[in-house]
Image 1: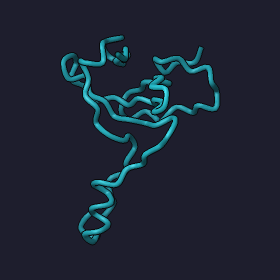
Image 2: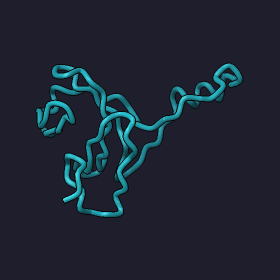
Image 3: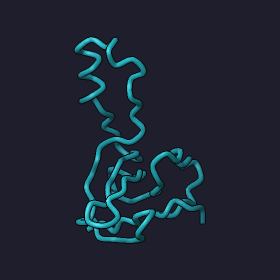
Image 4: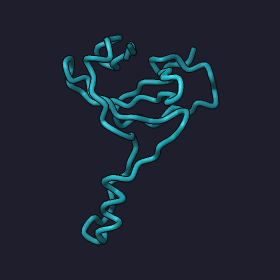
Length: 103
């Protein structure tokens, strides 16, 4: 069981959250200009990274707010949690706590 630290409510059990897919997927600038294949790729094609992966999560039974999480898909270690709109943390510095702040 994961302990996820909501940026608004603090640490909570993973059963309070729902996964929302890959984070930082840019909406097409001109969606009407996309053909069917390009639109399908935007909607359905996502990275399947082994290792650190940026994800969207919602605290569905708490504050109901969306946030981003950087998680290792192999070990399930949560590397960083950060609010929507904030840039993805740079993990070249290994001293990032699960709450997203540097140690």
